Length: 342
Length: 286
Image (tube, rainbow over all chains, first blue to last red; front, top):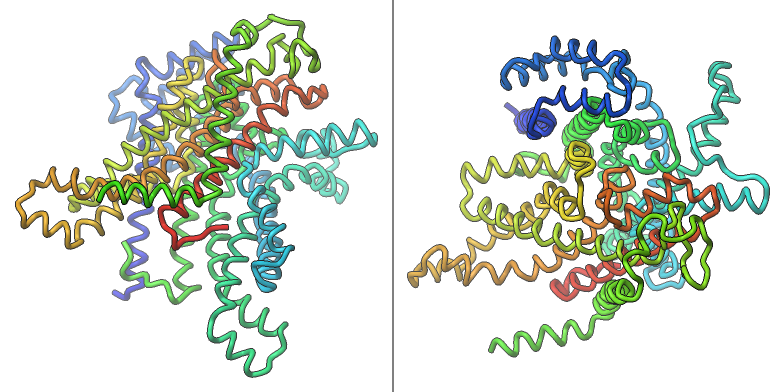
């Protein structure tokens, strides 16, 4: 067996193990509370005054998940249903399944987060490279660093609140127009089909949520790229390139930048692995129709199966993405010695 | 000999502006909130004490919210509760994590492998998710103290991983062999020889854990899973958002908790960076 194959096997076992633990935790947590989880669901439903369909729901659940059987049988059928992609029914909107609700929301989250993550990475990296190359002690560098630090420390949802206030409410008060305050698109526009107008409307609605994510993660990309760039600048091969009489532009982009960008790429991969659960609260604040908004509404209506489904899906996506990073990374960076670690 | 060591420490702390600025601001905010709650009677943050939605005036310096509660009184109370959550969660999390990590790193073997996989799961999954599951189950019954305990469920994993690595390297150092040769028991070695090496690091971790606990509390509360019968900074934001304070133009409701959180985060971060510089002078951050 080659070293890479052995490494691969090790990672796969870790993945399987951590997925199993995560699933078990999600299974166990609701059962730690005294009483039957179904009774709790029924009680919550009657509290909300929704008795329609309650009995059918309970029957359905009992049948699929074997809730009247012992804990071990329940656990087995829970995993079995999970493998078939069945996450149960939503309580809030009964005949709809949890999987269906999630599949409706997930494109919004992935769309918003993948675009913003990549954009902020590009902007932060280039800014960091340019300013890092000029040196740490210029006025511009100091100014940017304090600004970046501030952006890095402020949590993205706090920043989202500020954006919402200034660019949606305040702008509308003073200038008469402002960015949309909620939703992912103007209601009704989706009926016309997938037109240019629809796409532009989606972009228009996602500007503020996107800004809250881009600006808060920008700080970190900038700071890490800048410090990498200053480190690389002191290397011997830069001196060598200078001695050869290459132009500064060539040295910077072809020598320094290409070496400094490697750790940034790892960072981007890790950031991309978290996109499904990465900005739940921004979606809550802007009522953006992704996973965060779904989860928020599930919490509000005490829809426990839906909460469970969302959490499980996000956990699984993170685990899988981590696995993919581990697989690809040794191929990108040959300096990683995959045989020896862990 | 010990006194000179402490003295050297103090002089290092004295020279660090970041540490001082951070520590001072964090303490100052808490101090103000304590004094403030003595001055403002606790009825001020009960529902219906004042006319609802009043802008700042001479009686209510920061106005009132839609339920007629004084914002300033809520803010003072909220700061104290958020700090309380941060303190409890950081203390317990650091101690539990350090103990688990130490056992795992010092003894090694099968226990180490099992603990390591569990820590891996907790580190790779965004911790907010497990917390959402748990907090959603006991929603309605969450108090400030249970909130802190809920946060502890996940925040032990980072110190566990760090302390494990330290314990693994420490146990191979020569002074440990020497103490074994000199006939010290294993408990004695742990307490007398190894613990002192951990304390510095645990201090820095405490600040970090405090910061992330306050952050997590705010996140959970904004999702509607915070303590219902009490005020924290996150709960204040939750109320302001659910009564759409922003679109009613009630800036005096949404800004106090938001600005306070930003100041607290920033000063905790500076404090952490300063402490880091004192502990390992080699690493210099921004």
